[in-house]
Amino acid sequence: MLSKRRVHRVRRLTAVAAAASGALVVVGAAGAGAAANTDWTGYQHGPSHSSAAFGDTAITPANVPALRALWTFRAGPATQAGAQGPRFDASPTVSGGMVFIGSRTGIEYALNATTGKVVWKKQLDWGSNTLCGGKGITGTATVAPDPSTGVSTVYAAGAHYLYALNASTGAQKWKRAIGPATADGEARYYNWSSPTVVGGRIYMGLASNCDDMKVRGGVVQLNQHSGKVLHTYYAVPTGHIGPSVWSSMAGDGTSVWVSTGNPDPSETTIYDADSIVRLSASTLAKQDIWTTSTPPGQDLDFGSSPTFFTGTVGGVSTDLIGACNKNGVYYALRRMNLAAGPVWQRQVGQSGGTGDGACITSAAYDGPGSTLFVAANQTTVGGSAVQGSVSALDPSTGALKWQQPLACLPNGSPTLNATTHVLAVPMYGCVGTDVPGVALMNSQTGAPLRVINTPGKVFSQPVFANGKLLVADESGVLTAYGP
Image 1 (cartoon, rainbow, N blue to C red):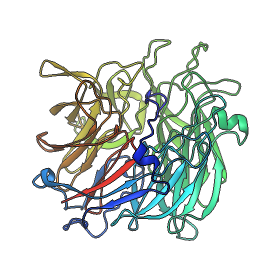
Image 2 (cartoon, one colour; image 1 turned 90 degrees about the horizontal axis):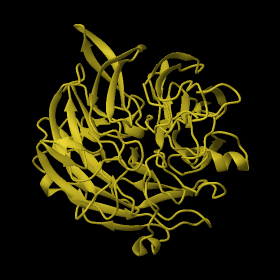
Image 3 (tube, rainbow, N blue to C red; image 1 turned 90 degrees about the vertical axis):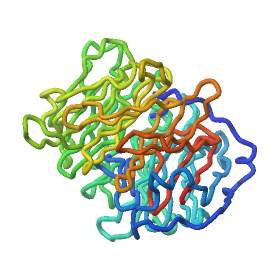
């Protein structure tokens, strides 16, 4: 969630504003060597949030230094009065030869994955300026077949509504408010989370539009085919307000796991705040919960979405789940027994609290390589203070395999090409002469390979798909890199 991340106000770039429908620069053809179908169909790759691509052989440690821009797309300016300017904080989704990405203007774009040309674009709701500034789109779309018709569908979150769009044409099938379908609901609620689609259902977080405004947070479950709201889980009882769900749910079709935000400071009970909660995938009934020991009144909640991984606990292969708290600690818990508490925990960054300095990124998981990659905020590496770092951890114990400093704070999550062992980490908060971009390194050794600098800050998760590395930034530029 970006309000909790204290993302800076948008800067309209002259070159971007001039491109009313999105400008395109094509530099070359797609790189050879990619697998025939290596799509990236949703937030952090899918409902397990592995953030790992498999089967794509085009980009390797050997050719990373020579990667070039194959095409560049620049988002067009706002078309609605009061909407933000062009800026990408959502991550790209790749499916069926197309790239889908939403802009802070509230426009969802569908691009040809080979050329970057616009196939269609659609104006979604961009939000309300009544109580907080309108924010446009920050959630990453999921592309999945309609469970009844099989038609490829884009499930895209606007500011307050969730949309089902035909992937080929952009035609709207349905839209549904996440929270009250009223002007007051639009002013108070915002879709920070990305849709999780699994088992014919969609899960969305209920969250407040502003940091200093609380709502009754929770999770909404919708029918994937019709958009009908099926069930709602609330993190506090009726009549109370409290923990927003800024993050996105992980799910396996039987249960869904959610990380929660801050309690209402006026409450004597925090209820399900500052927690990782397991819910029934069918009814959203609460099945299990673990809560951090957060001092009252401190902004140390979960902005990190949970990630599935597997570790060996007591000599037994065990399904685990983990997330990073804004206290700088990454927690690993038994997926089916959260209440037992952490199997392990590791301090990966300083306790952030406020500002851009908190650990809010999600991990990337290499199952075959048995490694968990966690990018985090300010810390010390080799005795030197750094803006951020990325650590390779043993998923069974949290033991450090390697750690590399980053020139800039990572607010977005890392991405792994698990086939070729290339790790991409977005860099957001820079100081001095350092500039934002994406740091690329060898995932097996941590050896730095290259930094791709960008005109704007990079919150959007880089994506490996179809032989390319897709990088979107806050100047409203999306670039496809390849060999």
